[in-house]
Image (cartoon, rainbow, N blue to C red; front, side):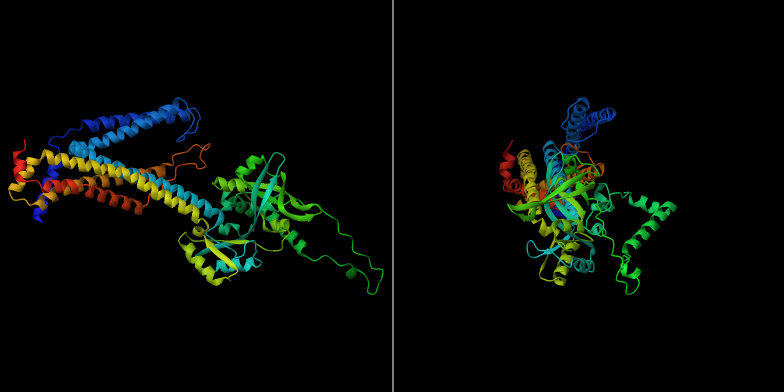
Length: 538
């Protein structure tokens, strides 16, 4: 143990500078302060001009150029200050090796954190629209007739929050200004909020407007407050009386006629009343493309129509725009439309059926257990899939991209390892006489080997720990800062960052292993020196 401590002390002695020189550190701090000041000045000028401060903006201008120059100076000053901090204590080459390891580790952590953030944001938006688990017919094109019982069974499974039926079909929206293909999805307004986040995504409209064109869509809290007011209570009582009147059976003519009277009055003919078109909730992007506003009527055309004299005739029905939603994903906002389940059933000419039941669980991890439980509880005529199975190709591609990015960025750590190798070789050449003296005094080859391996291992460990600290701190700072992005280019408001502990540990382990492996050749070279060669060298 004492021998190991002595060898570590000698290796540490080779790393340290004899004189402290903080000039590079002070220059780096000055450049960093100048860059931060220019960046803040550019942000202030943009806010003063009324423009939106965003990162990666394609627009030009003096504030934008000042902010870009400030960001570049801040980055350069930060790197220079970091190298200066190492160079204040360590020798130039050792400081450069630790600096390279630090930059490589911090860069990999930040890049993987941003990739995790984008992947998590994409996964959240997909699950918010299609829930965690989906139950659908095993036969393609089939329907679920007892979807209510299936939803009730799903709600009884452990870990399930709620379930709702859906019925979807591909249609074409025909507006006066343009055409757009969408997937029309029938939903059950009473239970749709149990499985997906559509109620939270509504920007205009409400579920009551799907059936009632005169519905007053208020916020949930405002509706509760309104129900407590005298006028709101009066409206609720009138609505209840109207519902009772609708549910009451119509009077029969024979009840009013005397018994045995053959001249009893005939029932009055039923008058044909024109009903308002069913409501439709559109994605915000498709609503913009069609230039539609609430209350406007458009035709929904389905290719699955009846067979006419000249061939298939498309089916068309008017729908009324009841509002729009913003899911945060361009594909959904340009391809989805929601209507009442019974309206879609009537439009498709079907009975009381659904083609899927969406199930939401307490967490992502609980989805697989709920899937297995539903597979055991439901018949084989139904297929149960979770979010991972439904999006296997997408998430597999994202995972492969993450692995490839990790391998590419690890090249920076390999370059740092080469710098460690070159630093140790130069140290051995410079300290050849001292190495020979140590061997002449009785140090073994293994002792010399441990001296230089401990030197390289310390450099790698120092760079790894400092880089991990900078990477995690920068990732957490970016996550709380919410750097805005240009909404004309990107479909998200800010850069999502998700730094995971498993990634940080893996990066630190890889960096330290690479640093340790890079010391093997120089250490072997030093351990094979003969004392005569070292003492005779000048």
